[in-house]
Amino acid sequence: MKINPVVLIVSSAFGDGHAKTAQALQQSFLARGVEQVFIVDLFAEVHPFLNAVSRTFYLKSTAYAPGLYGMLYDMTSRMKPGQPLSRFLHSMGKRKVEEVLNRLKPDVIIHTFPYLAASELSEKVGMQVPIFTVLTDYVLHGRWIHPSTWKYFAPSDSVKEALLASGVPPQAITVSGIPIREAFQKIPDRAELLRKHGLNASRRYILLSAGAYGVLGNVQRIIRTILKQSEFDVIVLCGNNHKLRLNLERRHQWNDRVHIQGYTDQIHELMSLSSGLLTKAGAITLTEAFSQSLPVIVYRPLPGQEKGNARSLSGQKAIYTAYNEKQLADYLHQLQIKNGQEEVQLSMHALSRKESSQVIVSEVLDALEAAFVPQTVHR
Image 1 (cartoon, rainbow, N blue to C red):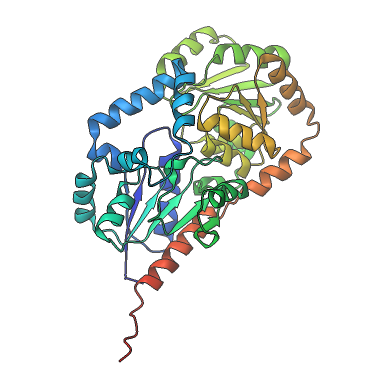
Image 2 (cartoon, helix red, strand yellow):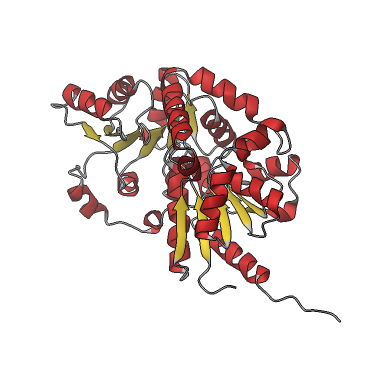
């Protein structure tokens, strides 16, 4: 293997999961002594205006027109790499991508977001840089697939089966799980964390996460259901939605059962203090909960990849999915009495691969070592 190889991880600010996955991989590379690890939001760098418009559309549509986003997602989910739409999406900004690659000179490229312009470029110019893809959802979308990809790291056996059905050869797939940060592998001191977060050891808590951008709908109604239908107190994470946070703080300023926070990078601590997580169906947050064996209720999953995640994981009995307040109340009751959670915990354990980052980094470094072995010349 080349000494101190240059690793390029292609990420994105569409949601929080792609960046978290990239950071987890970066931590593992650094732990293995690989120092030149660059996380680049490639689409934002080569198309800043289009990226801003697309990101705004994504956030607004999931909040105000989820059906439109879901329709577009479903329309493109089965597209093939060679189809015109796929080639167009992966070719946008290709010239600027080439400039970025010439500047960084990566020895390996890892995608945690399906903007595969580097893959498209490699196919055109015969670039020999190994390219890997780490899928960050529990459902497969056609945008992740490209013939120049050396290896796909799948989150689950079900996604592996979908890749195989799409024509990806079995030797190009490793079921690694989704990488999460090292913080989720540590066993915290519960008493110390309760003091740190100002919580009561005699109370039980539901962690309600509205997502990184606070787009979970009907948060106030969900809080009311939790308070009315269970004995849980609720910790509410509003993400970067400052308007939501201020509104909830005003409503609940005198209620000692409701604890309001904004965005936090300490969700691992709050998960360890909670009896359950109530959230949207973002794959990274769900994977983080699985690592803690924390039961999850997904409430009214958004169309698109989140609906796919919820459907897949509910089918594997790894999460509960509530589509109305009655179902939500029923699942809260199950969490409260800890009824029948053994099957769910077994499923969570099967999906939680805490060594995911290390597995991926090891395979990437092994591939790099093989790529740099001098070829024997036969005369």
